[in-house]
Image (cartoon, rainbow over all chains, first blue to last red; front, side, top):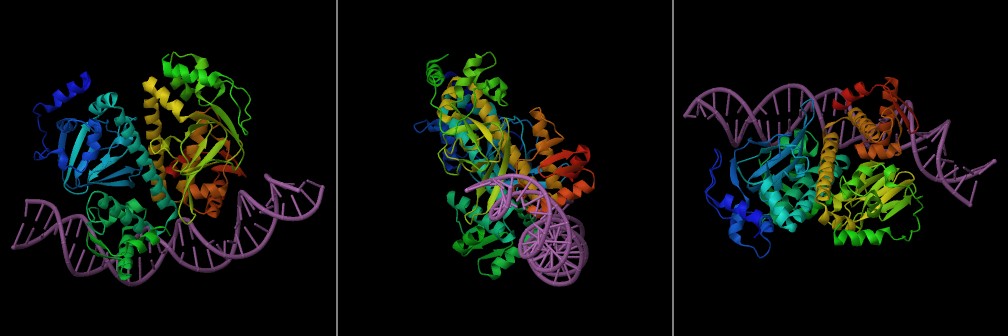
Length: 254
Length: 254
DNA sequence: AGCATTCACTGACGTACATCAACAAAACCG
DNA sequence: CGGTTTTGTTGATGTACGTCAGTGAATGCT
């Protein structure tokens, strides 16, 4: 272990002052959905105890709580330990465009890494626990461990790809295709984390879904009932059960 | 200069075999719009001759020529020396969404840096000269010169910001706001490169503009004539002259 | 528990924009 | 250079979706 990493580790493994809203119980990183990402810091053969050292604080946010505002200085990268978050940008006249929903195990904040301040605003959609990696810690580690840099580039590239997909959706797809695409995206992401790909809870409102997909809240509702009439899925408020992934896929693709 | 950089420099400063479509006359990088970016490789105090070594080849593309396809292995980062290029993604059923227009002095290809293959397709809009920096050269230099990595992150962040702006446009703006936003974006970018911000040539067709902005070609035409009736601008085919940037701005913002 | 608020949903209606069709002027090309 | 193709533009018509308005159910708050 090199000097700088040891220094940081020491600093972080000493008892930490917990902040106001940090109420997390002492869980190990093994239980965390972002374990795989944290492991990067350590390398494949690393000491597991070190994992706990890169996350300086875990914070709890309630529904509606703000994580950061556009323009805020970038202090930390955020990993969602459990829960979900929406990020969005605002026009001068106050119109909002939600740019992404982020669920358990996903990262946010890296898009601002070079600009040094957040480009969007982030708000919790439900009770959400967030691991924070201070930016200076990340930078120190990335000096020591080249794979961190690789991982960061990968995450940025991934974000660009996701955004391209959303641009295609907003520019070229109709309402049915949009909602189908949206549901399948969530389905895939839940499946990746070990949850059911066919039965899950939408943590965001119909209004948020509509905003994200570039359509009115009412249209979202109408498409949901249309899909339900066609036996594609059933909904009970925010609980969704998908019955025909294949047909949903063919709708999503047009 | 360290070993690896010296090695690469030697390899690249020896007389190069010109490829088929490489017809560029020997211009120095000082004349190039991307001089500022190339300089990063060298550092502020660097040897100017070195500049010429990072660009392995300069290629010429005619209107409609393909630079790369989605899925192609990422061989090089491309800098537009002069001309313009469109990048786009495709749906399975063949629908196209143009994700960006890129003009003199702008870079493309970096979005794919981590994935190792291009995420979009790129096509020249007019006769275009492109400087190519092979990816292995970039990587070697970035080992030696930390500011290169910083610069790469910055370019990726920039792309994310641009995409967010486009998502907001596609999701929340109407046809007039979209076209005004588009024209102002071009205006700013031309100005940055020393060209007139009020009088310029659109290298892309009305159809391409419509595709990019998520609206029909005919709507683009109609908004152009509406703007012309309102004395905001004059057009003669692809030649545009903006008469009232301020009013255009207020339209763009809604 | 009880009241206020938010949320999901549905119907009626309006409209911004797409689509279809036609045409003239450039641009291309052998 | 003359014919073909592409591109820009306009008009007529259609429609997908937004907007407005109203309702019941769930949720939040004190």
